Amino acid sequence: MRKAAAKHNRWQDHYARRAKKEKFPARSVYKLKEMQQKYNLIKNGDKVLDLGCAPGSWLLYAAKLTGNKGGVVGIDLKPVSAKFPSYVRVYRGNILCMDDDLFKRTGKDFNVVLSDMSPATTGSRHVDSARSFNLCQAALSIAQETLVSGGSFVCKIFHGEDFKTFSDSVKQEFNRHKIFKPQSSRKASKEIYIIGFGKK
Image (tube, rainbow, N blue to C red; front, top):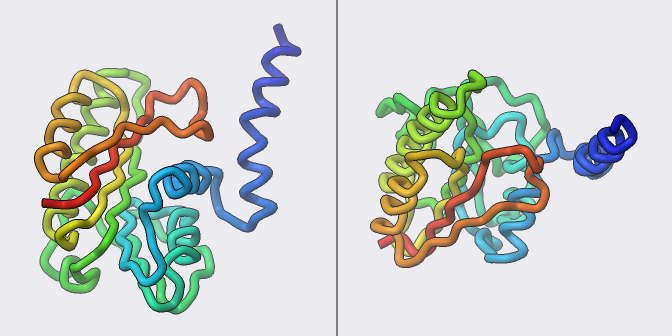
């Protein structure tokens, strides 16, 4: 049993080791990379908004894709210490209560809005999925405010009783949507991504 657990841990650490080698702050970068390879979400010259951007892996990867003709903006409650190109801006702020000043600083007309936000987990599946749903609703509201027509939205949600409600909300706002579970997600994780294409 111990041998099987050790083998499982080695596999999970594969992404962490790879992230360190490729100079990304966290293994979460490979989730976005999988979505990019499948759906070509972010293009050279795009403007991207990353909600809940700490520790910065998605920001760095998005910046590689947009190039210096584009721009990437991140928002998080926590400070982000990674080094970024000059066309990446990071702000401290609370996604759940975005004020006018923060909206003004981040700007609008984004081609893609990303949210890899997770709530502080409690161990209660119902509480955690409800908190995740609240973050997703906030992210969708910000996407509605800041995305250009035809823009795309990526949002992580914990699978629970509110999943269909949120999926239907995305479906209403976008021309099409997909549900995506990255291979690089931890196997025990309840996380899943909903992607909206073509903001109406």
